[in-house]
Structures are given as C-alpha cells and as structure tokens.
Image 1 (cartoon, rainbow, N blue to C red):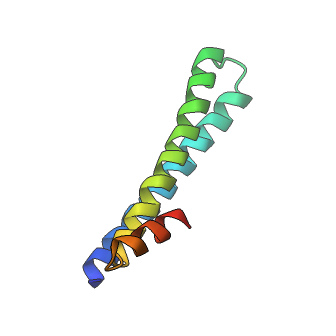
Image 2: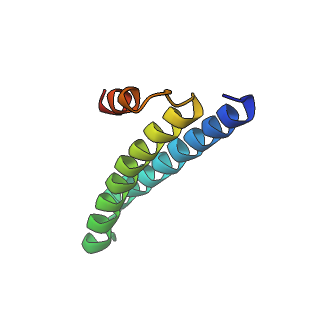
Image 3: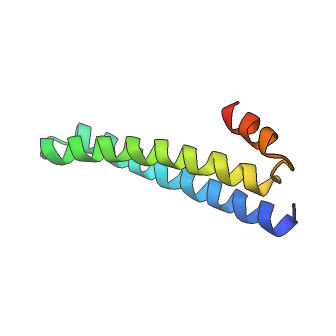
Length: 82
C-alpha cells in the first residue's frame, strides 16, 4: 500500500485514540463532580463506550484496507474472522 494511505490511517487512529481519551476524561470528571447530572453522566458513559467500540470496529477495517486487502475472497473472510 502507499505511504500516503498508511500515514492517513495512522493519523485517523491517533485522532480516534485522542477523542476516546478525551471522552473518558470527561466521563471521569462528571463522576467526580458533585453537581453532575445523573442522566447526563449515564448518557455520556454509554456514549463514550459506544464510541470506543465503534472506533475499534472502524479502525480494524481501516487497518485491513491500509495494509492491503488479500487477493481472494477466502483470505478476506479468514482475515476478518481472526
């Protein structure tokens, strides 16, 4: 794969890692805040988890593409399943 594609993948990976870290820090600050709204805390907690899980799924496929897809359909199925 080209260096530009790999670099772009790495930038997305780093940005998502930073975004998830900032979300988790925000959830932690809400947990420790005495004036935190319980409903907002719950929604942010679930939202942060959903973003973390979604970004892992997205990044796994983006990495698969960035490093070059296998040539046959059988290899694609095997790579995606583990």
